[in-house]
Amino acid sequence: MVRCYAADLLGNGFIPHLDVKISFYSRNHRDREPFDGVLGILAHAFSPPSGRFHLDADENWIVSGDVMRSAVPSAVDLKTVAVHEIGHLLGLGHSSVEDAIMYPTITSRTRKVELANDDIEGIQWLYGSNPNYNGSTTPTSTTEERETSDGEIRYLASQWTLAVFLAVGFRALLL
Image (tube, rainbow, N blue to C red; front, side):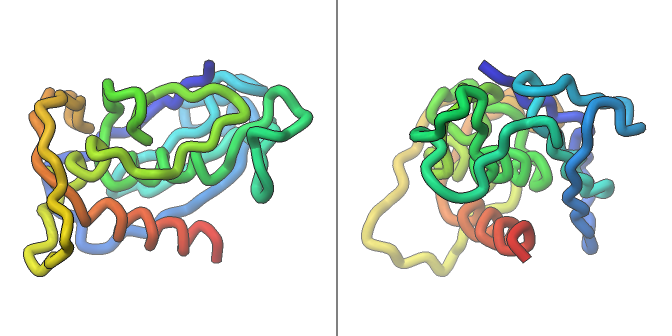
């Protein structure tokens, strides 16, 4: 089981311009959040206005292919970790819902990139929902609690914006 550590927390102010810098580092890399080698802490992201996204260079990252079939026992899916850390960049804290992308731990050789309702509802709580959405399905509301970046426990609402933000974040990651 490996953990994510969310270092800097989002304030309440609106940040109109944010640059995200994605980097791979090993061990102590001068941000007071050193990595610990293979497995353990995989990555950390610093919420706005910093926008730094650091990945542990010592991990056995799987960039393409099926991480679940990897011959390396400590293989880690890069997209899985990237989606989680982009959630932090957007201001989400860790979730207590195991199926959520924002759940704080993941085992090696695991792929988790599908958004759970908890992830979607968390981002909608922060940014609002799409008022023009006319889809045929209605997101289900939950009464799950989630820890937001400011440490408060909040109840959740509904679905759309996280998918858009994560898609944009992934596109930026892959360019």
